[in-house]
Image (cartoon, rainbow, N blue to C red; front, side, top):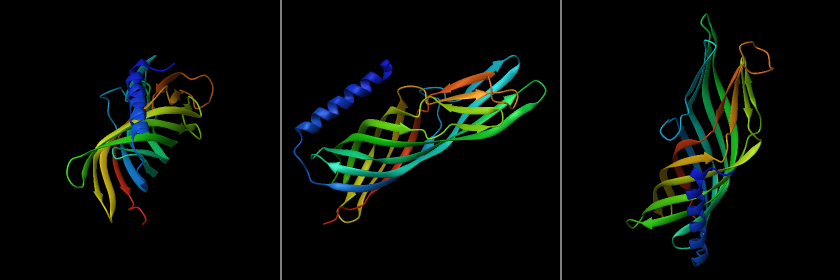
Length: 230
């Protein structure tokens, strides 16, 4: 079932699609690269979780991660473009298990995923070469494996799922040197991405405690589009 909080994103995506259909074609196909540091935040939802069960303290804290990849951009009008590509994402976590007598574990987890997005961008020209940009779309996210360290097991909710990605920022365009974009994104899933299972003993079996994790994230985006070949 779709989270009701995500319905406005879907309605906005449909609106973008209707605008795209009405646009006159513009032949512009660009190849781009991007790098996006993942920023830890608890503003929209709590990504740092702490539980107390039977005098044992379980902690999960998201750390700075990274998202990077390549993108193909198709111009479909004066105001819109269609984007797709493939991204590599690494999320980093700190995990701790404290008992009244000892620290069972104080370790790091790395969870890898791959994203195949498809999205629409709209542009507003501010000056001769500077544009305000808004982007909204869907992403098909793949999770290749679970993760395991002593006392902790990260179990993916599913091997793949859909997510919504929204981006806003500024783009500087040059005719011969390509386009540069700087902005920020929010990536949100339709369901939890991961369950982090905790074990007092270092044996896999019934978990003593678990924390569901959505995997949603903010990122700062830096993109470069190569100039179109003549």
